[in-house]
Length: 214
Image: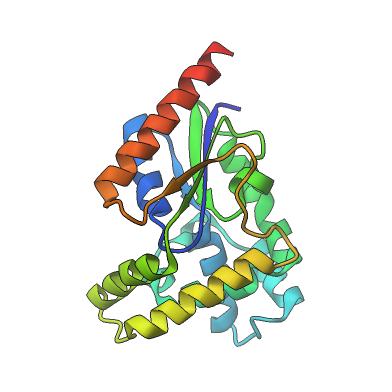
């Protein structure tokens, strides 16, 4: 396995933007693992199945292909809610684990962002970050993003969604969202994306230096 960067954290913390920029600098492939769960949730809803039906959700997750991770439908607030609901199912997480680990095994390295990358998917990752921010700041960021997409959701509704997803992601029995013991905490509450990326890049470069010397 090459140099793997595992980036975990809650919704709208900035981890996706950081992962994308790191991929450009390092020239590594980037996997937004949240898209896997969004794709599973959206596909399940389109089939008319219940998001709480673990067997159906697991079946859909096993059928996902790389091409299913594209499309604006996966970027909506509804897709995020569906993702959070199907992600609680052990069958879904198990079905998507091989996909993620195969991606992480790419040479010379890979970047994955999600909720359980450093704790479950690639616990041996050379570099681990846990990116977070206050719920209020994350809700403001997500509200701005959704408004630009034409979503009429209010800030208050988005904040409620953020808090509900945090609780669901952190309290689920299967691979709950948590900071790995060896992950570096990066709080972006008071940082714009440029400052957050600069901080993340310094962490990654230091980890890569240690990894190359080991």
